[in-house]
Length: 256
Image 1: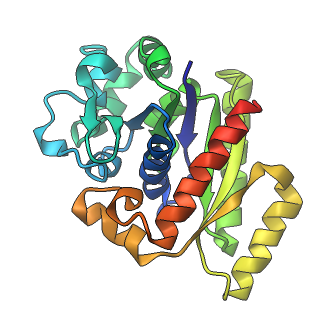
Image 2: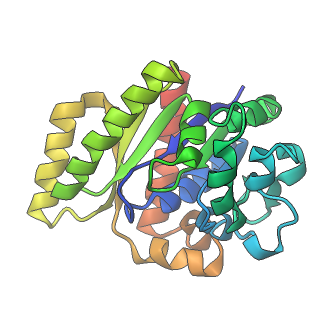
Image 3: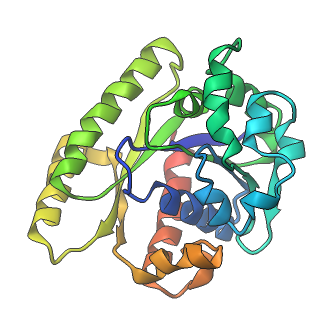
């Protein structure tokens, strides 16, 4: 049975999509069956997995409106080694359409149930805002992986996210918890980043993943080639860190 994780942070530009596609590729590399669900209308996780969002016959939009199943709408990313339920601009309209519908925040959860046995991991890339789309992700998930930069404003955003997760846990999804905080774009030469990293560890303890993702040019270049960094340049420091992170995730899940 699949473990379902949202990659979420209400602050934009913290590397949610980079984390999603590279963790997926890392998990695929260590033998896990993975589905990536792109819940962001920008479709960056779709394009970053080598799927052309403009050429998709069906997307996560159709799944949320229940006009297609995940089995019908998913595509396989041959080079990245995992399946993708893609997104494109159509998804922005789903926000408005879902408001009128029954079970509006549980539609993704229902759809994932049908493919639960086909995967070891389902990773959901959430948009930066707390929207109906993000809510669908949080209601589907066993837990949240929070990528964050070790900067002062990131701590501010983290408290908002923790409150949101508590509310969803209390009202909609009692299974939901923070699985862990992933320190990304980390530069050990910057004193402030080291200080914030220590604050995170003292406050959240073992909720902070041991793996740290360094600031890495190859990870930033990879999306323009339609590939996760783990596939684009497996020897880069960033790619190797994500493979280590994938191994840590597998270990953490076996203890859950």
